[in-house]
Image (cartoon, rainbow, N blue to C red; front, top):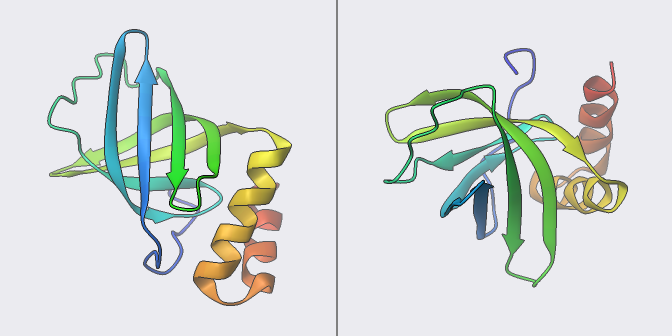
Length: 118
């Protein structure tokens, strides 16, 4: 994920729900890009396997959801960076719209999507 930058600070409220086996936790979304997301580190964070995939659901205030499979990229202080490993087509479209609205320029989201595909 070091090759990708995150978008400008998010201009929306969203909660991220992480799930792995029986563990589940919600945390505020801090920043997002097509490559991954930054969230506040949950108090109960104890991922033993850094390579483990997390079912990640971004709950938007509009009631929409973006589902993706993510993997821990790094953890620092009270922030987790999650790299996107898999998105379905509906979630890609929703995420692209969300990033376009946040950046205020659809061409920037399109450029990020192109870079992600390389």
